[in-house]
Length: 84
Image (cartoon, rainbow, N blue to C red; front, side, top):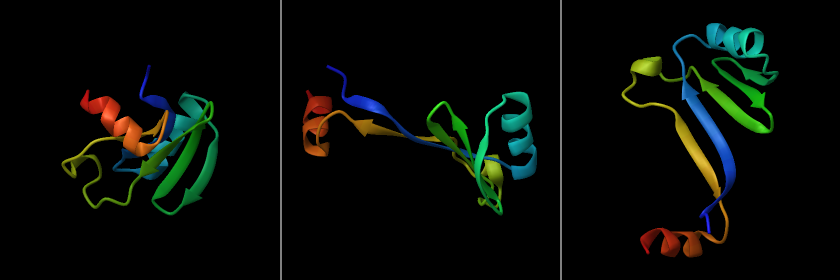
C-alpha cells in the first residue's frame, strides 16, 4: 500500500517570476491561476505549481523545489508505515 494519496503542492524557487510565468504559460501551456508580486501559481492538470521569486537569491538560495504529498491515512499511520 502506498503511503501517498496524491501530490499536495509543488513550490519552485525562481530568479525571475515574469520569465518563469512566460515559460509555464506560453511554452508548456499551463494556465496561471494566481499572481501576487514575485509569487505565481500555475495549474498542471489539478496540481498547483507555485513559482516562488520571493527568495532574494532565487534558485541560488541553497535549496530546490519543495514537494508536499497528501498522506493516504492519518499522519501517525503514515509515519508508522514509513518506519516499517
